[in-house]
Length: 138
Image 1 (cartoon, rainbow, N blue to C red):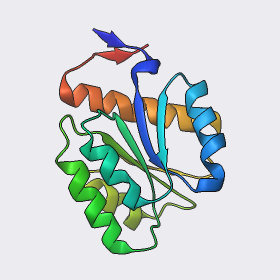
Image 2 (cartoon, one colour):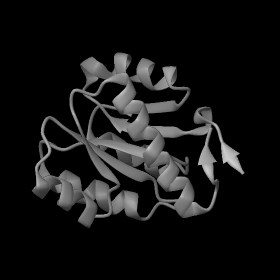
Image 3 (cartoon, rainbow, N blue to C red):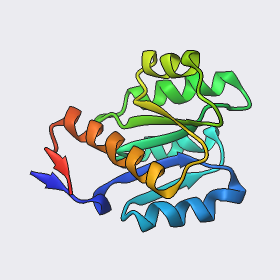
């Protein structure tokens, strides 16, 4: 069984000034973006019962307690989405921290279309593989 990109749902925390462009980019990949401007806006989307295959989060949030609140919310989702963290630079500490906490990967800015699409597809593949939903993306 396989899935197409248009069935991939992405929930992302993106700076409000960049949301339009980011949403357009994700839609151009054939994926479904749901964009919020802050970590606090994630909870209603998570609790609404929608399925998300990838959650895209910034490495730096204004309040470190936000990280733990977000992580707690995401870990109870079934199926659990793959968590991608984006950062201006990736240190070993950041990368290992994300993986240790159950995240999928860290991607480093600048996020070119090719780099972003590939990262989202790989993360979605990981989510689908864990949930047994598909063998590979088309």
